[in-house]
Length: 350
Image (cartoon, rainbow, N blue to C red; front, side, top):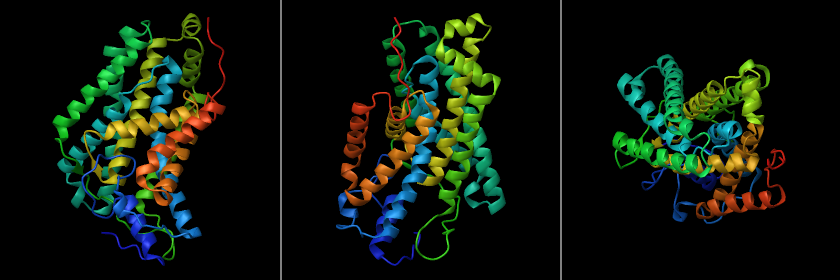
């Protein structure tokens, strides 16, 4: 157990509970570990330090949600498909990460070997999830490219159930502990705000990946092809763009980002299960819709908003109300901006 020595004992206890540091009953893993109301303090301390700590947690978790949301928004932006199997794809990536950690004994490795092992996990899981995503597109989604929109949507739900059952066979019905590979040392001076190696890892991995994706879409030849296919696949094909290749590249990149997110999730939450894909996918999809589905900056903004809302509502209102608050805010925003925070209004094609 991490000893967080802070001025307000209630703050430390509540902070540890939100981060999954105190023992809790078995739960379905999500972006946070779900806790019962009895584990929350009756009256959270009202202080600037406590508020800033919750904002820090929210931003860190929001960055992870945004990375998952990018997979949804990229596929939807190119072919208009809501890939509901994306969350369960990340669950399979977490299964592979746990298997590799166990096989190579990273839990008992030295600091240098641990960091090299984490880099290996991100690359391996990224390649695994990206390749699997492309295979699903070729086998399931590509034959339905010109079918009514409902057919690929139902197929995506079916793929999600297939992935979930593979995860059940891989992990078993119970949640599994992901080894603590990183020290829990506070990197900030003093005994106030807590910022550990896990938090740093999330930002060091997630932020560069988001920036790299934005540069790829805006400046590279593949990115221009993606934007052309997104606007009009037929016109893009007429000017020489290989539409199928661009779509396959989109699925690979989205899956690779999901694979990286699965490693970061396992290292940050330290608990994985075969049902984790549903909750993570639900909040990531919500972030994509909130920011404007199809918009890469919108997915990032939506993820950060979801992270902050979940953290603050869990701390000040209660975990049981978190989901209701998140979706109430989503509904209110969509009432006034149906296209999302950063989405663009589009004319209906006739």
